[in-house]
Amino acid sequence: MHPKEYKKEKNGTGFMTKLQLKNSEIIVGVDFTQNKRVNEILTKENNSSFLLYPGEDNFNLSTRKSSETKSFIGNNANIFILDGTWPCARKMLKLSKNLQKLRRVSFDNKIKSKFIIKQQPESLCLSTIESVFTVLKLLKKGEVENCDTKHFLLPFEKMIEYQVECILNPNNKNYRSKIIRSITPKDMYKKKSQRGIIFKQEN
Image 1 (cartoon, rainbow, N blue to C red):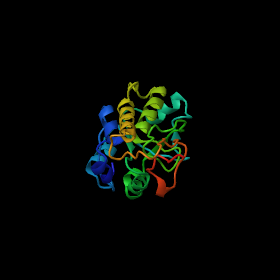
Image 2: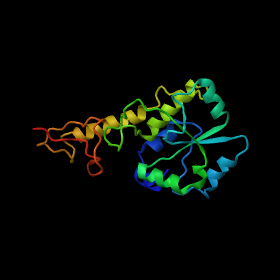
Image 3: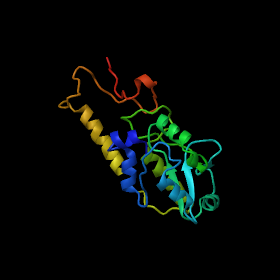
Image 4: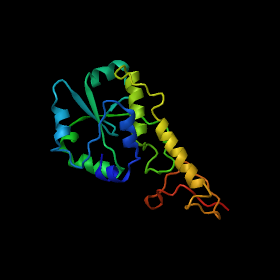
């Protein structure tokens, strides 16, 4: 997890993922090349490690047969996920020589993010907890994972519901009575200068 995410986003989806997923941990930093804990995981005997990161040449969990996934991932696997904004994640990967060497896994994103209060630069961008949820389902299909994901996204969905309710509440200090508010559809991705604006004025 990038330090900015750790300090500023105590209700971020990375923290939610940690609470929902057993045998997971948060390691904070930017350059993990010399990170003691990361290298301890990477060098542990009989372990295999992977990096979840988008790319055409990655092992695509969405398109592989169960037997292929099981053979590729193996037993005692660790999957590293870069938690932060996309620019921060790219910097983390650029600096971390040890993570650069890892075999990468990815998936075909066929779902729209439910994170409607936070616009992303591309339609394929998902929050950390949504990405992990997708990977867990694919690993379960590949007979590698047996984690119950039925209520995995529930805290995330409740958070979004609560935040939208607060913004639309007339008693909230940020409410503007002269503006008719409507949430911008998630597929209408904004330019950098407009990101974070989820409401528009209607005549």
